[in-house]
Amino acid sequence: MTTQERLDPYTLEIIKNALTAIGDEMFNVLQRVSMSPIIYEALDYSVGITDRHGDLIAQGNGTTVFLGMIDSLVRDILKKFPGPDGIRPGDVFLSNDPYEGGGTHLSDVALAKPVFADGELIAFTVNKAHWVDVGGKAPGSFTTDAREIYQEGLQLPTVKVIAGGQPNQAVLDILRANIRLPEDSMGDFWAGVAANNVGEQRLLALCAKYGRVQVQQAMRELLDYGERMTLAEFGRLPKGEFFAEDWIDDDGIRTEPLRVCVKLTITDDSFTADFSGSAPQAFGPINNSRTGLVSAVRTIFKALTNPQIPANGGCFRALNVVCPDETIFTARRPAPVSTYWETMLYAEDLIWKALAEHVPDRLPAGHLLSVCAIILSGTHPVTGDPTILVTPLVGGWGALQDRDGQNGQFSVADGETYNIPVEIIEARYGVHVEQYALHDEEGGEGRHRGGKGVVFDVRIEGDSAEFTGSFGRNRFPPWGAAGGRAGSRNYIRLLHGGRSDGTPETYGKATQLRLEKGDVVRMVTATGGGWGPAAERDEALLQQDLRDGYITPEQYRRHYRPGNGQV
Image (cartoon, rainbow, N blue to C red; front, side, top):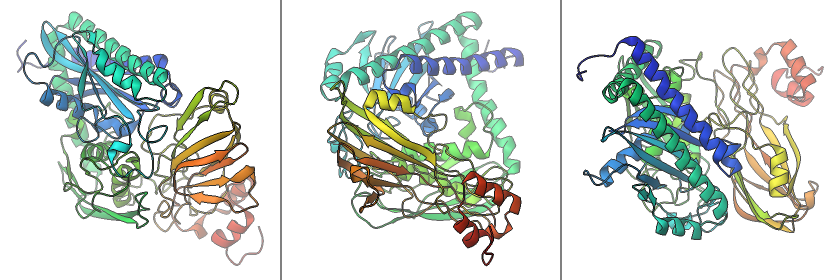
């Protein structure tokens, strides 16, 4: 078959679905084989397949923010290892470089394997997962006060960790020597190798059944299909220029807020997001890489166009991302980046904010935004083993034009991720979860109210522990839409001895807080923004909110029925 011939639609559909299924199987393998709860419970990882040029063909998402990073990694491999001897069968490449190779922060480690059929490179299988620790100055490797990337862990600048099927033991020894929990993280490494191997085997089986040339042709046609299906949705998008701005709380080092902004230009066949004018590269670790910026914009662009079809590189051909170098969205080495999500997610949220009232059938008001990620490290009080709990938290999503927001959902960054179950947290990390519940704090009032955030209390059972957390939108809460009120804030509160009647310490960002036995860390996530004026909320819904505990009588009188003394 020549490259100009098109596959018949039946074969194309079969191969398309097979490629998607390969991504799903890779995803399941990594979940089943990994050693760390952040992977096998929370699903903080993603897998994918690219063609030989690095164009994304299929992706199995856990974490949606990796949507622009798999193909970027492969392109970095192709650039760094050129020629016939640069990439060979049995090779495996390893990277966590935030500035090259599709990086985010050092804790997100990617593995890629080239796939050869009939002696020719046809694809790469890739996965990217959060490792519990990669060294650095603090357990868990991310902090809120790093001033340069060297404090954040071991940098792996796209290295060949397995060559021709033979592990590079020197690289593996360096990895093991720099990781606080080597058994867990090295187990996750080999789980990633296994997932890529399964992807390779399934691709080769597909080539054996349909022929290498046909499979490669199907990949090209899939990219064109993704482009056509995406452009077909442009008719539902508003046309013209749209603008939004917002403020990031601080960078973790300095207290000044940082302005970020976007100008969107939407035509019949292009979507341009220009972030010029946003704050310069920051001193603290909230910096984001250009790859992270592209990935963030891809995520919201996919939601606006056709989220139903599997993502591939063709879906993003109409998308243009503009931003000068060395901004908070496009930091350069050696800027610290360990809490990059606090900035990356503003890129999504700005586009969301600019368009929410123009496409209210697709976009709600503002949500918790921050991943609200925590690290709790210490010694297990029973086993004496060192422990590092890393987990994101859920919070409230904004209301839509026709219904209330969702309660207790993960940030848009996390996609298909899950809670680590309380039972596993208590058993594996030796702490006691005192409560995990929806809260009734003010915020998000509207004709339709924002979804509720949560309160999560953890009591320290061992002699001591350290806590790190980054809760963005601590000073600037989720925005309301069409007259709805802003949501509530994300924050951390330390209750010494578990007592709330003293003077609790409250934080938006905290690094290595020293905790003693009996101390309680209270983590509170935001309620989403409301939609429409609060006075227009139906009385029957308000009475149901009161019965359910979503609002208090005082909130009812203050925000919904001012001047009405009755509840």
